Structures are given as C-alpha cells and as structure tokens.
Amino acid sequence: MSLNLSLLEICYLIASVTFVIGLKFMGNPKTARRGNLIGAFGMTVAIIGTVVLHDQKVPPIIYGLIVLAIFIGTIIGWLTAKKVAMTKMPELVSLFNGMGGACAALISLIEYPHMQHETGSMVAVLAGLVIGSVSFSGSMIAFLKLNGTLNKALRIPAYNIINTLIMAGLFIWVVLMIIMPGFDSALNLYLLLFFALMYGVLFVIPIGGADMPVVISLLNSFTGLAAAFGGFLYGNKAMLTGGILVGSAGTLLTLVMCKAMNRPLSNVIFGAFGGSGADTGSGAEGAGGSVKDISTTDLAVLMNYSKKVIIVPGYGLAVAQAQHVIHEIELLLESRGVDVKYAIHPVAGRMPGHMNVLLAESSVDYDKLLEMEEINPEFSSTDVVLVVGANDVVNPAAKTDPSSPIYGMPILEVNQAAHIIVNKRSMNAGYAGIDNPLFYDPKTSMLFGDAKTVLTALANELKAL
Amino acid sequence: MEQVFYYLSDHMDMIYFIVLSVFVGVEVIGNVPTVLHTPLMSGANAIHGVVIVGAIYVMLHLHEDDFMGMILGFLAVLLGTLNVVGGFVVTDRMLEMFKKKN
Image (tube, rainbow over all chains, first blue to last red; front, side):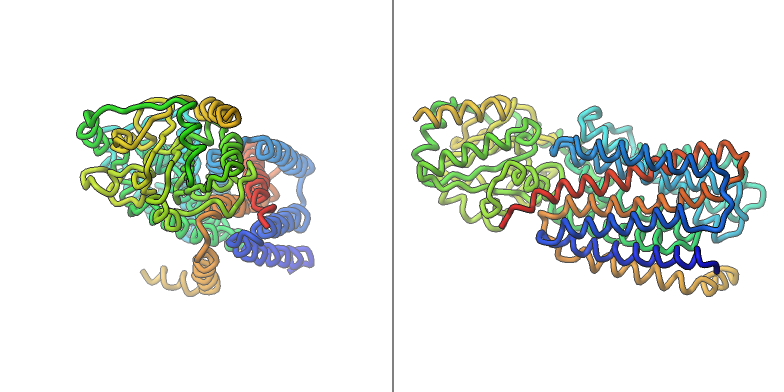
C-alpha cells in the first residue's frame, strides 16, 4: 500500500471515530453542539483526504468538476441552511436526506457499467441503487407534504397490496439481475431505477402529514443503509461506519418516535391516519354540539386574574410565527403574579423536540417547558389552559373513544382545567384529520383567528389592564 | 449455496465490522431525551452524507472520455455536498438554541 493510501486509511479512521463520538455527544443537551462540530470535522477530514490522497492519474477536467461540485454544493447548502426559518427545519432535513439518497443511487448508476458482475459487488450496487432511489423520491414527497404543497393523504385503492407487490417485485428483480445470465442489461437497470423511484413515491404518499417525522426518520436510516452498501462495495470504512451508524441509530430513533405516539411502526406505514378511520371519527363526533367563542378582551381579564395558566403550543403557533408573542404574554402574566408554564407533548410540532427548539429561539426559559408526564397532574389545579395551534395532542378521544384512529395515544389532559381556551384558525379538523370533542366541552371557549394576530391583540389587552 | 458461505468467510472482517457498528449505533442513541430527537435526526442525516466519499471515489476512477459518468458524478458530488454541508449547518443552528440555557 502506498503512503497516500495509508494516510487515507488514517483519515477514514479519524472520521469513523468522530462520527461515533459526535452522535454520542449529540445525545446530551450540554455537549450536543460540540458533538455536531466533531462530526463535521471528521467529515471534512474524510472528504479532503479522498480528494487529495490517491494514486490515480486524474485528468484535470475531472479534478475541476469535483472541486466545482463541492464548491457549489457548499455555498448552496450553507446558505439554505442558514436562511431557512426555524419552522421549516423538518422539511429541510427531509430535502437534505433526499440529496444523500440520490447521491447513493447515482454512484450505483455510474459504477454499474464498469464493474465486474460478481455477486458481492452486484448486491452492493443494486441495493445502493434501490434504497437510495426510494429514499430520494420518498424524501421529496415528505418534503412536499411538510411544506404544504401536497397536503392531503392521497390513497389509491388497495395501495397496501400494490406497494407490497412493487416491493416484492423490486426484490425479485434484483435477485434475477444477480443470478440470471443476460438479465443484467443496462435497460433492466434503468427499469429497476424507475420502479424504485415509484415505490418511494407510493410508499410515502398515503401516509398522513402527522406521521411525516416518523417517515423522515425511517428514510434517514434508509439513506444510511445505502451509504453503507457503498462502503461495502469499495471496502471504505468511513462510509461503512457512517452509514451503519445512521442506519441503526435512525431505525431506533424511528421506533422511539412511534413509541411516543403509542403506535407501532406498521400502523404508521400500513395504517390509516387521516384516512378512512378518520371519516368514521368525524361522522360520530361532527354533530357533537355547538362551540362558543371568546373575545381577546374577555380572555385578557380571565387570564389576568388567574393564579395558574398553562400554555399548550402546537405547530399552528410555529406556522404563525407566534412564539415571540406567546413569550411576551407569558412575561406580562408573570409580572401580574400569574404562574405560567408550557406543556410540551412529545410530538408537538412536526418532530419530537421541534417545539422546544422553537420556543428556545424566542428565549422562553427552559425550566418552564414541561413534558407531558410532568404537567398532566397539574391541569386539575389550573385556571386557564391556552391551546395554541395544537389539536390532536389534546384530543380526549384518544382516551375515551376506542373507534378513534388516535385511540391510545398519550395526550395532554387539558380538559381537567377550569377553563380551556383553544386558538384555531377555523373549525377545520386537525392535521391528522380527526374531529376533536374538546371543542364542544362546556368548559371550552374558542379563540378563532391567526395565532400571531390574536395573541398580539391579547398582549395589547393585557398591557391595557 | 456453498458460494454464499465462501463469500461470507472471505468477508468475515467486514461482517464483524458491520455487526459491531450496528450495536454501536443502537447504544449511542439509547436514552436520548425527547428534546434532542429532532437535532439528533438532523445530525445523523448529515453523517450519512459520508456517501459523498463514494461519489468522489467514482469520479477519480472515471475515464477521460466518459462524459455520461462525469455528468452523473458531478451531480452525485454536488448532492452529497448539499447533504453534508446543509445537514451539519442546520443541526448547528438547532443546537445553538440550547446554548444559553444555564
């Protein structure tokens, strides 16, 4: 082995170690940021090492293209990541994940005509192609769903059967390409690519928006797997460790998220959320009674003379960019001696932990953010609960109605409080498409309107008191 | 069937490596507070961007007249870079929020 390649192996060793340490550090709030930087450092070492340390005679044009691609990618990636609003982060993660998947698929496409068609590398190349493509097209659909372009769960009839058939077909196709002489033509490779891309689309499209975080996490581990197959193909240790780490950690993270919603993964992928199940749900509850609304003036008075107020923020708050106003209201109330806390459901926002990040951004004190288990016993001693842009996480049907699609999901028990104020833009059903009996509770008053507008009005009323 | 066993035994180092890495991945994520799930997913997302190393490797081994390869390779490196740079920067921005907590 030449000196260059020996040095490259050391670069990869450094990268692998930093990936493990980086991920470990990211598991603790104190060290998380350092962990991310450690990982980024290792990645830089691996990339620069790969470009510089090799024994190939590389034509200048190819060298130029590599450097140009890295240069353009760095600028675009950096600017997008820096400029995007905090609320848009989940879809950005999905987008970047898709890029990684596409990268893995492209590697396989280039490699295929040049390689020895022996079993081991065939498996690695074809698996990289299929998994990378599924991850790419799936992530793009998840991205479109999260940014609202595709906001309905589209269900073709018998999609479960069709998807399972395509999945089985992809598997058989790969096996045939490996074992059947003459079946490994370029045309068959492109057909495989086409069906893998289609599978990614069909796999994600029927899944409701509320489950998107789980899907992104799953696709994230897919891309990890695709990277690992690339590593297997080239015997590249950095790709192997990075890919497998993300593959296994991502799978575990997916399961943890499912657990937070009290739904098995199979239910997310094959189940009906916001589909047929929700129709029966809304049919049963739709005629559930009338709702009453409350003005900001009345609410300001009510809150001002309360002892204890709990705010339940949901994604609606984030969409309306109302996290700063809510913090202002919190400070106003506290200056009047009201005890104010935030109740954070594990899946509040679009991803677990998303809401904490958003509220931290508007400098809400960390100690005021209470998780579900801590805050649930406190609702019964609370005067006013203000639910802003959250719906499914406070839906009592999850506890009381076995026919509800979210039955069994742990919820914030806001209906224990003396007054419940729900801010929503309209009476439309929530993200999961399920009607909410909480709105018809005699203790509940609705505060209709855009969260930011209404809460700004509320803050002004409070100041005037 | 025999071939499969030969293949496995030829690649035993790699297989040990894979199995142990799986355990490390699971171990590293265990007991992470919910608050950190999103940044962690995002950080993991950046790390699988290591696939770019493969894209660069493929480019380095291309023939000078393989224009199709060059176009696809250019795209692959570009997308891989987006994944890496965007992933780490966005994660850093999320984690920045946890800084002033004490």
